[in-house]
Image (tube, rainbow, N blue to C red):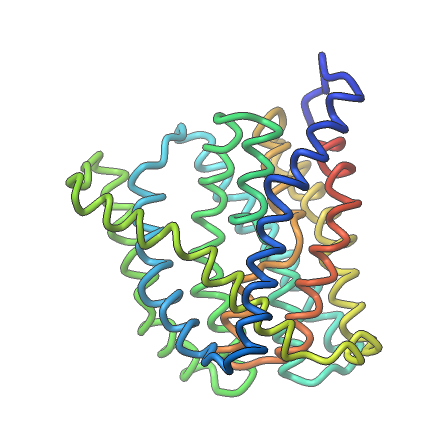
Length: 315
């Protein structure tokens, strides 16, 4: 199912690994630290930051990503089916585990978010660029677009359900501009319409700020949580689901669909990334167990330093 690794020396692979840590992981970590330091010095309103990211920055990122996507129809369909089936499997497993363990509704919602959504954007895409080049990056970007849409629709619904009814959750989804940004972006892609240069520059400038704001929110959330929360068993259940179970479900989905080659490697690595930072934005804005999400994101990101070489080896 996966392409064989050829012509790559072990020392070269290790050099790429350390390069990845220095050029990708360290900057992400430092931006989180900036957020934590800022909150120590000044009590920032993270709800306002979440509004900026969800209502302005994310729509701009989505429109430019969809409009400029360059992928064949067959690959696009494979990515779509993989995303749907793998998400459904993860959702079923997360719900079952939450009920078996008798977790509180807000904790179940948070665990479901971290199980369903990976940090495929601001962590996964740089990894793909380093490991697979521009072709792998383009394929990964297609998967990321689907994840952004799901996070801001399905993810918003799950977070809202933690403290509200299904009808209220659906109403909040209808109010998010991500839905309309996706429609615009898909329309531009399918009809091959080019965005005027000044407008494209504006959208890209705003969209590029999205990962930074989200990382700052994560840093603030980490500063607000108490380390004693790491003793909670439900957090380690969430970590186990994301680190162990999700990669297995991704492999199962790839085999079910018969996806192989570079695309299989890309989808496996992207879906197996640490828990999505975006989940912290959703629980901050719409509800859920903030401590569970923040610690799960932090722990899975730290563990990824060790698991990432294994994932890339399998890919």
